[in-house]
Amino acid sequence: MTAEEPMGGVTGATVAVLGGGVMGSTLLAALIRAGHPPERLWVSDRVAERSAALADRLGVHPGDAPSAAAAADVVVLAVKPQDMAELLAQVHGAVRPHTLVISIAAGITTDFLEERLPSGTGVVRAMPNTPALVDEGMSAVSPGRHCTAEHVAQAHGLLATVGRVVTVEERHQDAVTAISGSGPAYIYYVVEAMIEAGVLLGLPRSTATELVVQTLYGAATMIKETGQHPTVLREQVSSPGGTSVAALRALEDHKVRAAFLTAMEAAARRSGELSSGG
Image 1 (cartoon, rainbow, N blue to C red):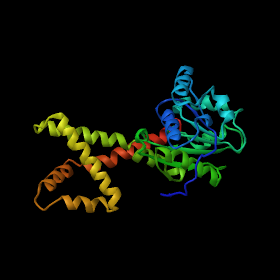
Image 2 (image 1 turned 90 degrees about the horizontal axis):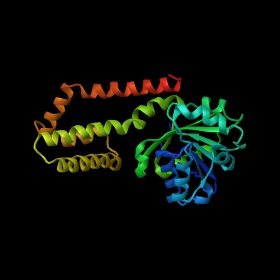
Image 3 (image 1 turned 90 degrees about the vertical axis):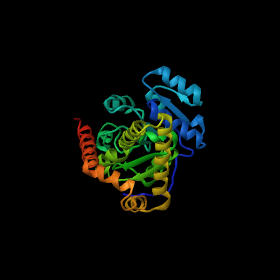
Image 4 (image 1 turned 180 degrees about the vertical axis):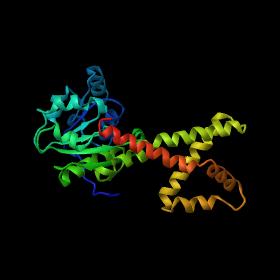
């Protein structure tokens, strides 16, 4: 697993995003903010009106999937997993030699992609997460058998427009899905609970929300900027016999740590089932 890669990019490349939903449109907008010329971007969606609306808003080219793929050096597959086989069948004859194909669909393996694309096509499996919407995403990429170093650099450069990127072996993608792919849902769940606790303790909901959100942001920033282990930071807050220790004891009594481990194991297991067509 590589936490830092040499930054490559898609500068000068024509990029086609097939799928104009939330993540597809987010990538297009991020590429433009990063300085990618809109005239070198294509969008295609099964709903033609969505493609047209995005093209009008962002100044990119609309088109059907084969046309967009044929024009591109990098093709991003941003459709739902259940729609992937149909999309690959549509673009099989349009993907040019040396084109890089990046899939951001959960559970779609590089083998699945390679079997349905022209022989020798470089493919990358990627798992981003929804904080990409605010340019704070976390993405993990896994190159297929025919990927070059340039392909990996291109994938990094594209996904770096919406946050951080790491490279992992594909066998780790189920764990990535469980940790960062689904991770925002766990955080929102905890935030909901903390806000409700504030309301239960008599705070106005707006005040409880502000307290919790800033506390979450500050704690995450502390971990990122200090480089200290979370255990060290937790102990700095936990004075002997104090309020934090009392709260943490209650969490341990309710086996919250074990529940999180079980939950993430369940997410990883479900990701594996999806990869196997389950």
